[in-house]
Length: 282
Image (cartoon, rainbow, N blue to C red; front, side, top):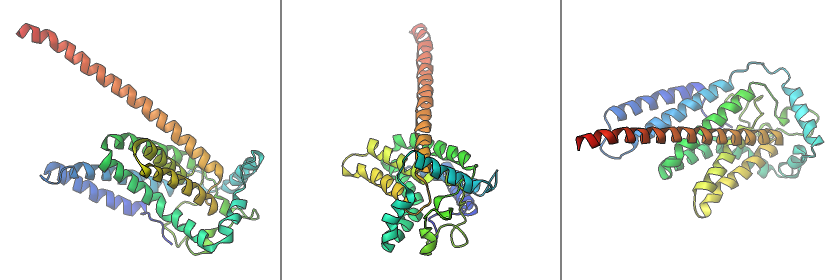
């Protein structure tokens, strides 16, 4: 089963094509519909960031040495902190139903990128003023997660003798290995799946109105359940991802406020400097 994802080479070609389209639309903008050039520029930027993310996923500064031992340390620490056992949750859910297991595999493979794409499209079309701040938080969070992932950590499903089952491999739905798209299996910490899903949940709760605002939180809950039930992540992977997200969101907001404050002072200073000249003219 293939993930809804492109390799970094495919993403690079897509970025180049989108960049060319954005350049043409910017130089010779069509009269209708408006906003095509802006949309093309934004999709080029997102595609470029995705290309870098996929490329970084193929690199490993430290190799895979120690990935399994770090995973065992995480599991031992979670038990010491009395967090629920991922293996027990997997047995109680996907272990009792092949349908639930296969549905979880499909959700894991399709909604990671699919959900993010729909979220960004919704923001761009319906809430343009919120799009760029959220995009910056997304990019910063993903970048920090990538830096942490340079230290390889194995997912639970690769630990032998701990009761975990690789549900993707069991049902022929794995997005890893030769039948997948070549994703790095040793980049489990932190969970970018959880980071993106919680970002979507936070944004939809804050921005949307009506029952639709709960789509994001439901997606976050399902994603957290799925990454554990498929043994692709520990609880700790998601916890660290949320901490990274919160830190990046706070940092983006602080920097944005500083920039807006400086811009406001600059506008006021220009207005004050212009007043004497206007008085002289009068």
